[in-house]
Length: 287
Image (cartoon, rainbow, N blue to C red):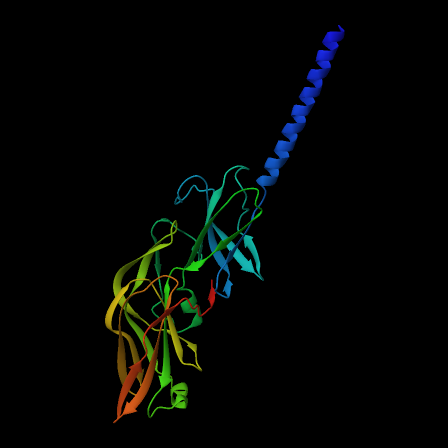
């Protein structure tokens, strides 16, 4: 009888120990699958709305991911999501995909149609043409995930300077008209890897006068091969001149050229610098 009582006591203690372990494990799972704080960072001044996908153990799908096109909104440096973001379990990593500007309805994440505005003469129009994308993998029990966003498009910058028989005051009081020509303005974007494929016919883009003092004009352009004798046209004082360019426009790059306007025997002449390629970002807001 005493032996039976001893066995009973041992079994009783073991059962309570197992229950305690199970309770601790449940608490651990609960903590690991808690709500996540997701944020994005970029060189642009402000991002107001970003689209977010969260994917487990498979490629990004049009629908049926752990999270599908959830809206992330930034207000006063604080990010909030349109629905809760949390881990599915405590043991599997996930991949987060983010893009901006936010689009309400996406039917094909592998070929999202997008177009730059052909009139980027206002900040709002240019900002709406700038597409940002990023992805990052993370693993529980992380409670915060930060997704770096990069520009998928190129920037063209044209700086106009006064040359012989032309004053800076003349140019500032009567800025020249600048146009970016022979570019494709439509593309499809693969949200799983950030690949951009230009589509459609070529068109012209009216750039934004980004800096009125330095007479700097900028345009957001889809990455593509350029082979044009009139890529940049500059009209001033009733005359028009053009600059050629043959190049591959790359994502996140800025190509800058300086054009010096001169008057010689009643004609408008233009002297140009070598095109410079940098990663300079002229800033702005993406909505």
